[in-house]
Image (cartoon, rainbow, N blue to C red; front, side, top):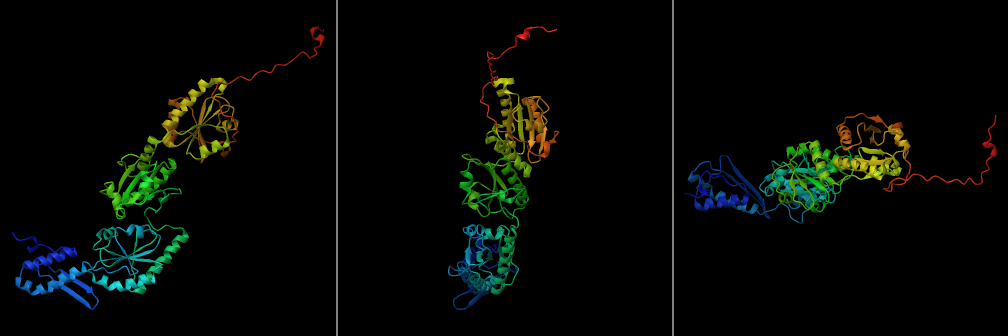
Length: 513
C-alpha cells in the first residue's frame, strides 16, 4: 500500500511546515505532484540581495512527465516554503509590536491606548508589500498610537476571534477593545498615519463627552455606580484578578464566561448587566456578577472546563464551583442571585426606633421599611413584648432576601409617626410598611401573627394591597428616646404629701342652712 503522501488524492496541508514536508516526501519518493485543480502556490521572499518569486501551478492529474518537468520548480517552492516558515516580518528593533495569544490581553485589551493592528500571513504578497510602510507608520506614531502585528497564520485563534477572513487585515482597537473597527484607508505610511490620527481624535472626543465605546462589558477591577442595567456593575475578571476577587472573596459570585463573537453571549449581555445592577442593590454587594472573556483568558476558562459560550458558574468561598442551571432573563438571574444570598445571609436586624438617624438609614437604604407599634410595656410586660418581637424576627428571616428594613416602637413614644400612618392611639399592636422613596405606606389589616403578617407582606411583594400617601408627603418627626431595657414596666411611684402643716377649717364640720 502506498504511503499517504503518494496518493494522487492526498491534499496538501495548509500549514507551511507541514506543506514543505509534504512536498519533500513526494519529490523524494518520485510520486506525482497533484495538489488540486487550479490551486496555486505563490511565495515571495525578500532577502538581503534581491527578491525571489516562487510560483507553482498544480498539475491536476497523474501525468508523470508533467511532474518530472515541474519538479525543479517545485523544489524552489519547497525552499521558499521552508525559509518563509521561520522568517518573521518584524524584529525587536522595529517599532511594530509583535502580538501573540500570550501577550495580546496584557498589551492590547488591558491597555487604554489606541492600537492599529495588522493581521498578516507570511506567504501573503500584499502583506510583504505592506511591511515597509507599516514599519514607517509605527515609527511616526511612536508614543502616540501603538502599532502591532499578528501572524494570523500561526496564531489562528486570534484571527478567528476578530473575524479575519483575508490578509492583510487592519483593525483599530479603540475605546471598546472587544469590538475593534475595520480600517478602511489606504496602505501607504501617510494614509495609515492619517487614519490613526482620525481614530485618535474620535477617541478623545468620546472621552470628553463621557460616552463609552460601543458594547461589551466595561473594563474595571472594582465596580462602582448604579443605575438601570449599568455595565459598570459587571466586574470584568481576568487571569490576574480572578483568584483575589472571586476565590478569596467572602461574597458569592455568578461568573459568565463569554466570547465576543458569540451570538448567545450578545443576547445575554443586556440581561446580565441589568441583573448585575439589581443584585448589587438588593444584596448590598454580597452577591456579585462578573464576566470573563474566554477567548482572551483561555487558561482560566480551561481551568473550569468551559466548553461552550456563554457558560455561567457559581463561586462560593471554600466550595467547588457549580454550573448555573437557571434561565437567561434578568428576572431568572436576579431570582437565583437572591436565593444564593438568602442561603448565606443573616436576617436583617430588628431595631427599636430611638432616633431620627435610625429611621432615616433603615428606611432610605431599603425598598420597604416594616414598622411595628407595640403596646406599652405596662400593658404586656416583657414576656408579651418579646412574643411580638419574636413574630417580627421570624418574618424578617422569612423575607430576608428582600432586604427590607425592620423597626419597632412603643405606643405613645412616636406620636407624629403614629398620626402620619393613621394608627391614632388604639389598636395595638399595629404594623405598617413604608416605601420612603415614594412616600407611600400600607397598613396591616389582619392579625399581628405569623400568618397575618405573611399574608400582608406577600400581597405587597407582588404589587398588590391598598396603599396611601404618608402624611404630608414627608417623613414625620422622630423623637429621641431611651432604649427598652428588656424588663417589665414599673408603675410610676405616687408622691406622698405631708398634710401636717395644712390648716383645716373647723367649719367644714358644720352644716349651714
